[in-house]
Image 1 (cartoon, rainbow, N blue to C red):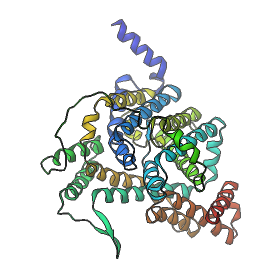
Image 2: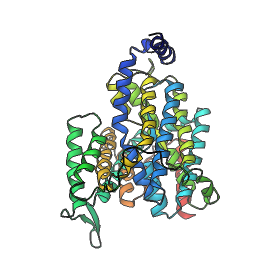
Image 3: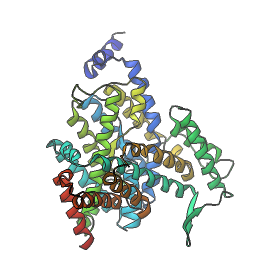
Length: 441
């Protein structure tokens, strides 16, 4: 009994449960709920990054460890119910733009992630991170999220085989008579239904259901399956970023580092503000107390993730699910971190999941990320055109960076020629100049 009291006393002292109007039971339930809504990243992130040639098992371990450590920092340092893990969109940018389209080795991409993490730490410690975000027009911030969502959905449709190349029309509908494509289509319906019914852990549950359905269809292979085992080795990816550092400063890679930094800046801060607002954690001026401690979590996490072997980490909007269950403190995120660590020993289970089982998740996550588009004022052409170009150029060029470049250039150009230069911040001027130089360099 005394041990339970000591445990309760530690939790109360560390997380200030009563002061935040919560209790340990509520926080644990909130943590489990948050984990269930974001656990799909354990499956999806290795699937995306391994397409570059990275070892699937090593990436999975790097994903779990970096997410757990960064979320622990959030828990004990900032005391917020917000979880952190490798971000969707940024992992796609890593794999499909830097490696597959630009033909850089994945080690160089990891080096770019590492440098962006170092920049995150510097910007956070100097409080410049908030200042940079404030200087970027809101319409572009919203458009970046929406554009990445469309890009992720396209990748999901490709992985599912629902969208395939066509030499005459660029793309066309895939062959639904093929078992993997049919399974992916069924999976999309199942995932959408679970999400629409607000089933907790809908994304993770759909992966499990699709994987099981794939067994009699011959898509899921379970020839040598065992439930538990020691974690795969980190050796194939651990420290591999050092091999990419020499080529990091090659022509064209500076914008890549900027893109990692830029996108995560808005992703994390937007999530922090959005989730904190729902949890009533903002002060009377609408500011987030301990914002610096919260931001340092993903900064350190990104740097550590690059060392371990994964792409940029960010705060997860799925944390809102835990907040909806009553999560108000870092105890919620502590539970998430513990559950992530427990997943280190189920790698065989992860290994049997076919790619078509995670493809519907990418499509649904793309839908989630499109939500900010509703906040863009499309009646104002000076805001609508740059936002549209940002959104459209990402999937149509298969490059997130190009969407940002064209959005920034369109914003500066339109406001310049219409005499609205007061709305162009110094940061936007600098970015526009750098992007123009990039085209002619």
